[in-house]
Length: 147
Image (tube, rainbow, N blue to C red; front, side):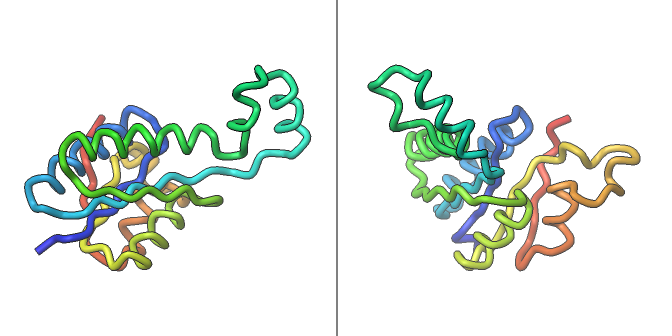
């Protein structure tokens, strides 16, 4: 039985479809959903400039992972509306590594990713998130066809 499902998102259409189907699956199975998003570090100087240009009431929200936090919050709202227990993880670094790390940490039974980057010759490129996850996962992987 599947009790913990990990899904990765970057806010793209492909990832959003993977999140949507993960929520549906988790709801049917009574599973918990762990939503992961990765981010790259942003230069401190850029953050300072953005914070100076932002209105005073939102300066606090300027941070290296603001987009990631927004994507995770949106996924969490969807899961909660479907009655699915959810946790979110913003991780710095490679997206595939972030997904794999959370899967190991949570004892995931299933990882769900979209298939973007898995078509044609691209499927042989190292660095493709679904490709890397499928080869290194500590559990089963469901690749959602979105293209």
